[in-house]
Image (tube, one colour):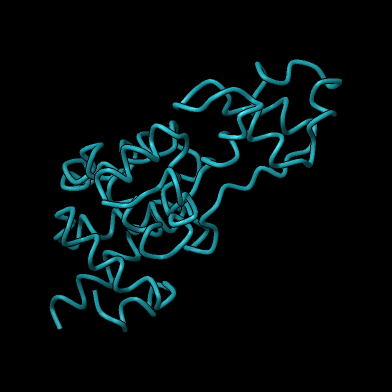
Length: 202
C-alpha cells in the first residue's frame, strides 16, 4: 500500500509502514485480503483512532453488557463510570487474568487495532511478535504494535482464507462474536478494495 492509497482511505500516515510490514509478515498479500483486513480494522478501531478499550459504562450499560457480573442495579451502581474497577471485575479469573484484586483485568484490557484482551492473549501475541507485552502492554497502543497484533489475530484465526472467498460475515463473527456493525464493515471493505485495485492497475 502506498501513501496516496493510505490518505484516500483516511488512514493516518503513521500507520502506513506498520500496515505494509503486517501485510508482508502475515501474507495479507492480495487486494482482497488487504481490503478485508482494513475494513475490519477500521471498524474495530474507529478508523484507527481508538486503540484502547473504552470501559466507561453507566450502570444500565453494565447490566446490559455483562448481566452475569452485574445482575442488579445495586451492584452495577458501585462500578459505573469507573473504567479500571469495571475492567478488573469483568475480566477477573478468565483469559489468563488473576482475581479482581490482581488488577490484571485493567492491565490487560483490550488494546490494538483488533483488540487483544487478557493476559494469556497478550502472552501468546507477544511471543509471536517478539514483544514483551506482559511487561509493557501499552506497546499495543502504538501504531506498530496495534497493527502487528491485529495481524497476529488475523493469521491465527485463518482469516486470509475467509477473505479469499469474500466471507465478510464469517470474518466479522470471528472478530466480533456476532455481526455488530456489519454494514459499515462491508462498506469499508468495498471502499478499500476499490482503492487498492485502482492502485494495482495504475
